[in-house]
Length: 50
Length: 382
Image (cartoon, rainbow over all chains, first blue to last red; front, top):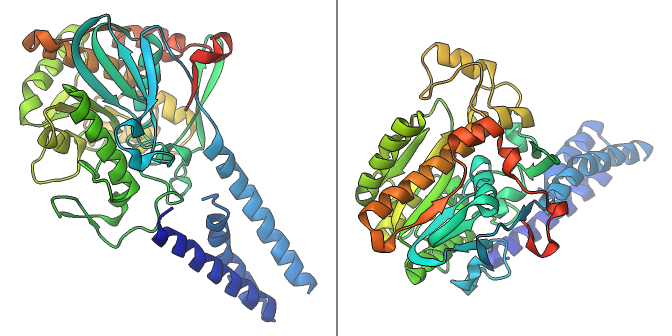
């Protein structure tokens, strides 16, 4: 894994963390669903599934 | 709180339902039985240790005849969504008889690409081939390196060494990465390793196997640069005359860089060829991209396009089956080597394997060996 690729994984993990934090904090159901949808591809990448 | 738990639970289910099949496919191994002509199997990193231990490294099968002669390299799996190439490689590994010369075969040149399909394109994860001993299962791959293995993509892919600007997606395309470089993208590294092999082994003939859409003009053909042209024309002429199928010749453009049929010839003494067989599953207009479509090549919308004169291949309700595509590859490869041998007898070849008519009549599966019946030392996982 190159350094740049590693940094992209770090950035992905950071964004996932922020999305989960926002998901927990929000009280708006539309925002909860939106955060969930945004999380999906990022989690698949972090888990190295796709 | 309960609502958040339900939404998180749904997300987890979607991740697992969508992700696990992809994960399983990535680790699914195809089996090939080394035939009597296989004399050695080694890694491509033998020629460039910069890919050793990476996903870019891949197996090379050596089939060396008793008599000294020329050397040829058959590259399959450059685009892993063009499966007749890899199936031809397996068919040759198991069936090709080599009396003179040496044949090197790489079944998965872009191994990473073979480890994941194109879900966005609606392609299946696997396709299946009927054999006398049961159904054999193969991974359906993607055109380029998986983004899992080569990430991120650049905004624009700058070809090395020409500097031509190409689409960002071609940074992962092992047919835009030639001649490669030792410190570039993984796709460039694997091409560089192959170039090192070609130069160090003194390979005479390189044949890169592909499939193309029926609606794309560069299909059902041999692509060749200037120096390979006489052999390509001879092969096209003879398969038409002897075996009664069309396989026209296309000239390799000088102004479009990174392609195997251009760069290999320019950066080594080898004579490159690129073979395209018609894989209608690649056409955008087809119905569902099913495993059956990949194997039988029958599609009503492609047929309709044919009726309107929009295709570049002869096409009817019988489709363009895998048997025909692999059969064409087999015949054209053998004819190119025959043409080469006529003009270069000291660096010639004497090879044989069932050709187009045999494969169409008996089916490709008839020729594939049962790994469960073979000596386990001869079974290679790909």
